[in-house]
Amino acid sequence: MTENNLLNSPDNEKIPSRKTPNIQTKLRHQILHMPEIIQEASGIRIYGRTIKSIIFTTDLAIIKNCDADAVFAVYPFTPQQSISDAIIKASSIPVFCGCGGGTTRGLRTISLAKDVECQGAFGVVLNSPITNANLKAVSSSIDIPTIITVVSPKTNIEARINAGAAILNVAGGKNTRDIVSRIRETHPDIPIIATGGNTKSDILSTINAGANAVTITPPNTADLFTEMMNNYRENADQYIHNDDKGFAQLVYEYVSKAHSDRHHD
Image 1 (tube, helix red, strand yellow):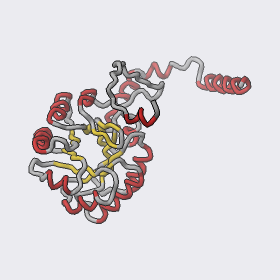
Image 2 (image 1 turned 135 degrees about the vertical axis):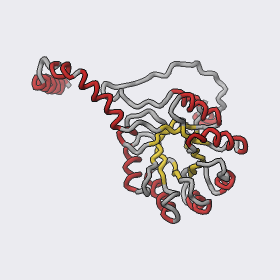
Image 3 (image 1 turned 135 degrees about the horizontal axis):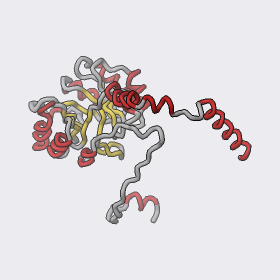
Image 4 (image 1 turned 120 degrees about the horizontal axis):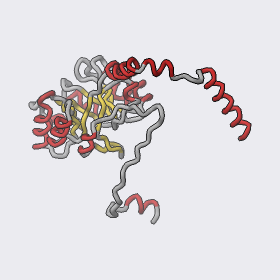
């Protein structure tokens, strides 16, 4: 079968189910895991990549040490190109960048959207107060998906879609599930991202209401570090006395081995 025929052939062959191998390294094994229940979502496929879990953070340390499918880089200040550029460059997963819609509106949202597209963003996120005219101007100026945030069941979804919204981001707090469900009644095919809540049952409920992907707000770095520091304190004696050979001796052995290996190559 030629390459073209292989790419265009229907997927009608059954492939046996296998357990997914999990690769970890000695130092980078304590990553932040997204809730497994999110895998029940259908996902949203963007440029061939299926996205189900989206981490809501601008913390580079968390972005580099999580297993989310993508990042929502949205923060409560006016968007700045230097911030989006740093996040996109450091991230190994797709980034959706906030480009205003609340305090930041008008021409600046258009220039920000163009800039993050050039930086490599997978999409732009606009906040709920943005007008349909402004939304249309942004979506018409870029060639990456425009995501519009929905916070109220009263939002005119049809008008948002007509203005260029490719994906809806439902962030309605305790009303999120109901908003998602209402949207699905009239728009069964529009891609929906929604906040998942704090429990597995909340996340599953949001998915069952019609969300294709789920955003998760992680604990902050200070909270994550507290557990590690508590462990260090509880096992302080072990760490202090667990140096039989001494650091200098370990360094000497390492350098000697590296030198010997070079001579044998």
